[in-house]
Length: 425
Image (cartoon, rainbow, N blue to C red; front, top):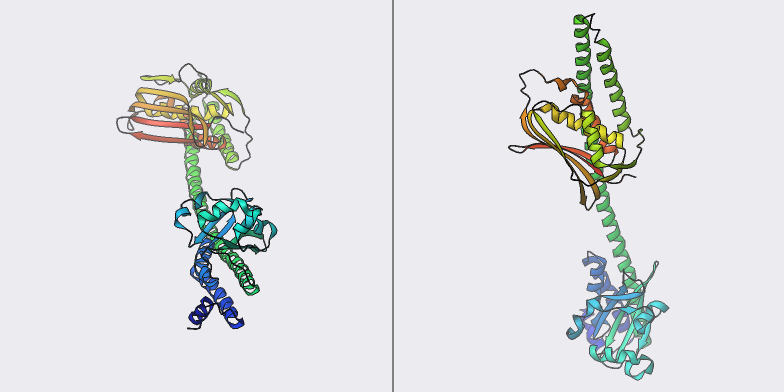
């Protein structure tokens, strides 16, 4: 009831001491209400301005803040009672700091008042905008915080208006409280954003832990598979020693070397996973590396048609060539091992995506697989059939910045793909 009486007295022009104090309390009250009702700093400005324009008996008002794209420009962030004829241009409106009353208020960090814009020849550039907006007087005050002057609040009057000391005190109070309240709202917003960031970070860490645990499980499975490889190699060595023909030589040396290589490959795998392996890069040709991988993979199985489809162009790539050849040879050996007869095509092609330039080696297999119940083909005993080699190939691809993927579809056969960045390092 007191507030309503105060507003009535103010409209009647009874600006005595008690009434002015009541107006100041009303202004602070409205700003506090805006702070409590808002969920974002911009909303504080909007709600407060809507309640303050009637308190100061202005016809309309606006709040300007520094433009994020150019700190020397001010843009309107909210308006109240703004003439509808020009409201649609607010999005494009910019005021340079230091220019005009609002720009000067920010640059000088002081209140700028104009009793009659049309009576001041120095403001001739503002006569046309004043006519379009329909104001004759204005007062603009800087919004100052501990971080500096971030903007200004401006109140406009349709008729010439002389500002009293009481009005100036009220308006300064409004600007100070509005800046401080908005600063608090911004701090709360920063706290909220930081809380959300920490929540996302926690989720990322939880996911990373889960991935690490999954990787540890894969590691255990790999060690079990390697143990199986070692067991099979040593068992074969024992059988060979029992059945060796002294006249043709003992096969124990060959199998012992195979066992030694298994151990060496396991050591290399662990070195890669620990990041202790140094990658040596050089300019290479993806097609030539594909041919080298074919040689390393061993002979193409009988009954299998094999081609390299890369066109006539050279496909440049900067990478660790020997390691790439080893990984690709492993995939070719895997394809050879699984195919009894049919067609295998190795496609080599550059690729482009938002992540950069890549080179892809894609092995497509269309044919009949090896019968699980029948004898293993001759190339089954090559090193490229081992589970350790496949794991090692994946680690090599990761160390070279890429990955290996596999897949199969009924009627389309199996696919093995090695994908590496066109330039590493």
